[in-house]
Image 1 (spheres, rainbow, N blue to C red):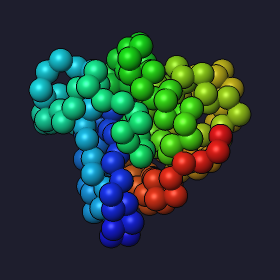
Image 2: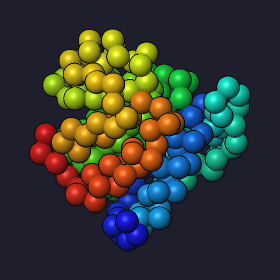
Image 3: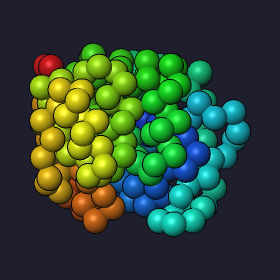
Image 4: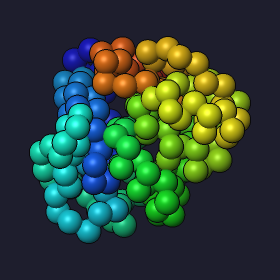
Length: 185
């Protein structure tokens, strides 16, 4: 998979409390495939803190402030999970608008664990086959998605997975979809 994503820029949108491994492992896989990744956050700090299973994790440098970027500048979007992270993103109008641009444009989007919470807010999951952390099942179904319990689900450029155990399968499908580029939605 080396150089599969050469020249592609991938946005990683996060807030405080993202599940650390759901950022670090996909980011490593994307970069190993040749992608340029940017950690983007609406948070005003230059660093944000991850969540490591049951306690606070490491601090990560924010590469770009959300206010300073446009979805048009990126080829794909990664939405890590964690409970706090997507819960904060989904109530941030600027973050939801950024995610919505990816969904509207057909650019590939990959969301793991609780990451789909932010996708729900775009109003664009209706009719999509998706998975997530089990506690989001009802939220996704209520938003019109077809929820399934599988390690990774791909629906026309939208890649979703349930939890950190699914990261190997998630990374593989994410890279495939990001390499394919835009999808007609």
